[in-house]
Length: 122
Image (cartoon, rainbow, N blue to C red; front, side, top):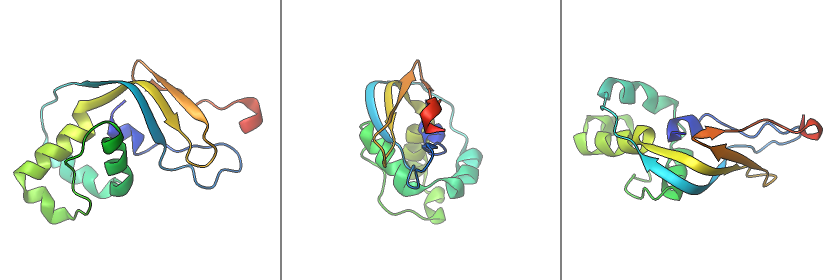
């Protein structure tokens, strides 16, 4: 699972009001090289919740992303490389996503998060 996907997921258990961002408990992380597409990065940047993205990257061992960002940074080649790497090349292969409100763990296996709810959670 890429951090791009993580940034779009939330806990949807009935009654949960603070289900984003999901925490990450990683047991296996892989890096898979992907060709950089600056246009895609510039397009997706405004849609990301940066604070959640940065925290998720940090939980996977990526500590070089700036705390504060703005769209002007997309003109900086070094920032684009760091952003691209964290967003698209780092994959959570095994572990769990954790609801920030309930602590419910959603397993991630072979890079696929299982966000299915139990009957009592719907």
